[in-house]
Image (cartoon, rainbow, N blue to C red):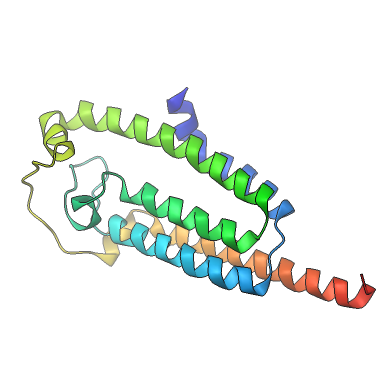
Length: 177
């Protein structure tokens, strides 16, 4: 079950995203605050992706020194930002449910893979006793890990919220409602 949820999280994100957008009631102010919070989450994700060699090693540099799952932590902050930008409790609930379910499944699946793939090295990392050398951040590595797609998705989401806020404001002014 967890494997299935982890594999489907991108598709589920699209479904939840459409539903969240439907209920969203953004204002330009809520978008500004939410986008700033989302940018912090994306910055954490970029930093993490710039250190990560997926499936090839236990990464211990960058934010992995302090977080077991900085990409998911960044996604959570990003989700919080989109919830603030949406200015709607139903949208916020959808975002929280999506993140709680899919991130929990992804973490569980990922940790099982890492234990199986790297054994003692992952155990040492989880216990805080990892000794792998630190490496510098690499934007090329972040791009290779697909973080540019996440950034494009966030930009599209914020743009759609801006369009919805603008349309809603224009609609209310024109109709006098």
